[in-house]
Amino acid sequence: MDHGVPSLAHPLPGRSGRTPALPTTPSDFTNAHLAQRLAAHSSRTGPQLTGLHIRHRRALAYIDGELADGDALMPMRLRYTGSADS
Image (cartoon, rainbow, N blue to C red; front, side, top):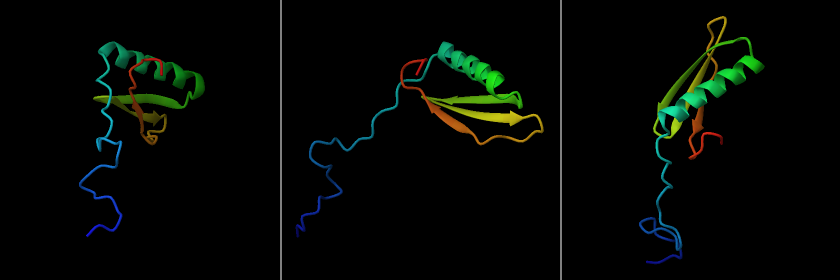
C-alpha cells in the first residue's frame, strides 16, 4: 500500500543514493608538506606544544598534539580535498 512516503529501497528522484567518493590518497610529498606546515604553525602559535603525531589513512590525516607536561590534546582530522594548499 502506498502512503506517499518514498521507499527506502529506492533513492529519491535525482539522487544516486551513493555517498560521494573520497579523493585519492595524497602523495608522500603532500603528507610531508602537511607535517611541515603543522610544525611551523605550532611553533608560531603554541610553544607549549612539544609534539605532533600524524597518521594518514587514505584521504584523511589524524593529528594528535602533545603538551610539555605529557597531556595529549584532542585529536583532529583533516580531509585531503585534492590540493596540498586547501
